[in-house]
Image (tube, rainbow, N blue to C red; front, top):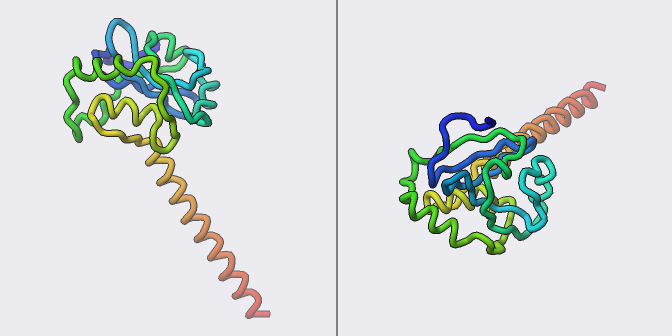
Amino acid sequence: MRALIPEPRPGDLIEIFRPFYRHWAIYVGDGYVVHLAPPSEIAGAGAASVMSALADKAIVKKELLYDVAGKDKYQVNNKHDDKYLPLPPSKIIQRAEELVGQEVLYKLTSENCEHFVNELRYGVSRSDQVRDVVMTAGIAGVGLAAIGLIGIMFSRNKRQKQ
């Protein structure tokens, strides 16, 4: 079994560890999850589903967790339970199943699979992956700017000494 303990309960967030990112789904019971997938994605596509980041639409699908995870590890991760009160499991499942089969907008930065499942569980659309990437890019940008500034200062200092 690829699951990391605990076993999912209806309404749980499932984090699937893809090679370059995390895919998110919501457990609805009997081995099934509801998640966002590009219209052409095959369950368990793993690394191939990185291409989903380029899509602007997604289909809400209900599939077996085993098939969605494929060979990737997964775990229950209700990481925002300490910040937000989860909706009752019956409400989460009802909301998720009402959306199955619908085509929805998909944006990597504002309407991705993590936003989708957090909206279902907490009523709050958020993605820590997006926040973390933006923060990392910001820090890297500041670091590169500082290196460039230091380089300019050394270059000027060297010219003044000549």
